[in-house]
Length: 485
Image (tube, rainbow, N blue to C red; front, top):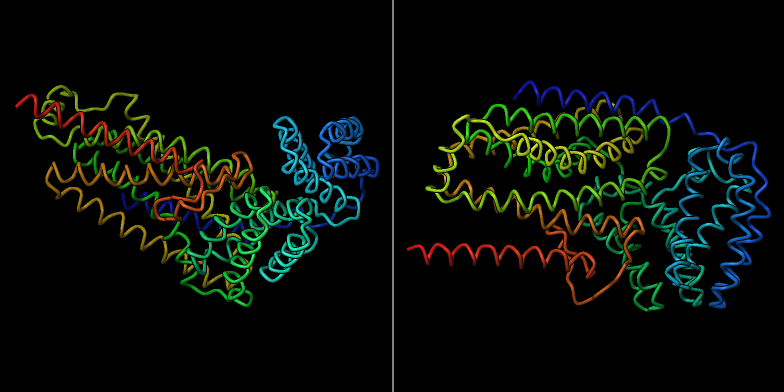
């Protein structure tokens, strides 16, 4: 096990060295632009129609835009694939909003698309799709002030486009924030979802309050510097949740003395690390955090929801076998002392998803810090962070071995169930940040970040359904036991 841990730490160190030297491939701005003037004209007409809530005219102008786009999109793609992908994604967002008949969201999506096309036309985009002007916490707060001005003047169409830009630009500064305050990072991501919902519903007072809260949270970090402990905290914070899941799986395989099952879990862990490293290389050499970020939200959301469903089953299975007689009966039936292929694969898949979900953010945050502090401090911080994480993992396995059977299964099932609830809530929240799930708001729902609870029924209802299902299963099992007595 110690050799495996050492391997994983070395792999991450290699990644950071790549991150320091890598982000140069698309640093230059685009020199030869395709002529997008006609497409901009059609989008401006669509924006004007959307301001008048005339979706028929919006659709007509948008269809004319798409015909014009077909003629020039290959030229845009040859100049910069990330820019082309960004525009295509925004076109898809407009199309989806039109299909749903949502005039306000269509207006915001059109505004964002118009801004991108204008930036491209005016040479304000780099080849990696990011703005030629580097986004800093200071410039981000300036964008928040501009958004507040639009909201105060009741220009919600412009504000909607600015909110989309805020969400995209957040991906370039989130690493700066998470290394200083996990609470501010969590609050800011929540407030970005709330802000989009408030602007979309025309709740100007709440929208302004949310903008002001974002500014208040971010202003103390304008002149922040970074040290060893900042680098150490990133792998600790991001890795702890994955460690809870992995620790429960490995403790179970150790309890059963099932080496083959443990190898499957370690295989899932290793694959998750390798995929995270591959993503790190992609971000370093080909893209940047902003251009990759939308996909990061989607991957986080999808893996979170899928992992939550699988963890629900694992939690039920662990709870079901907390009865000593049932466990002994299970062991007698499994005389070959191996898991079924399906069970081993599911354990490996859960480990992979847990590592991938946290590993992607870890590598992006660390790469973001690579040019902001001395390399020796960064490497030392990473070693300390993963060292502490390893000690915690070893401690969890040692404790798991010594726990009596019934407490072990109960504790393991509770840990896995907790992660199930959190992964479901944070997964849906990530899809809201990506714009794939509406940013529905209910201010009566509290924000409890360590449980993945956010003020939205979209994320809270599935969590409540999981809890109700768990209560029903436990109650049914207790009733069955009483009848058997």
